[in-house]
Length: 157
Image 1 (cartoon, rainbow, N blue to C red):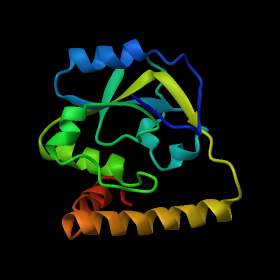
Image 2: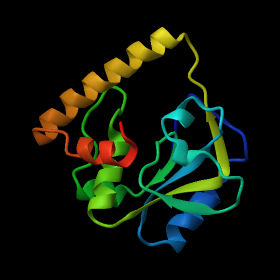
Image 3: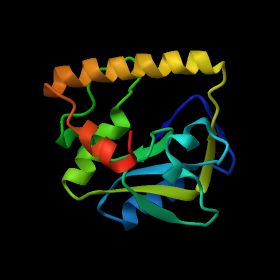
Image 4: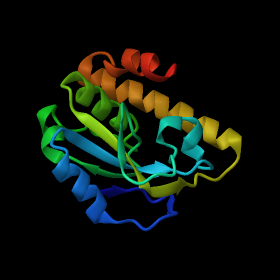
């Protein structure tokens, strides 16, 4: 399990629910909590907004804010590269999952709010720093960033 430090749990965080999904769905490599509609990340990952239902649903990509990740799967593609903030990790995970036909799920009965406060100018500068780090880290790893084309096709980014 991974839990980011800038989230607020809006429903109880039941580790057993994450474990249940992983054990009952053998192709799952990543289970993520759903996002509240007012989360900072909701505009970036609209497919992660809770749909007010119980259970899990498959998605192509999920942010790692509150996640259960299959460590053996990570090892299968060399784990994540060294990074200051782990930016790009969720996209790399989703890319490799899609490449080999594995599943990512969002758990709609576990809802979190991502609270990233501060002025919009500060957030824009942080996004730019993230983009630069992703380019540097993944260029060193792959010579190019293999998931960028896939990311653009998936969500027009």
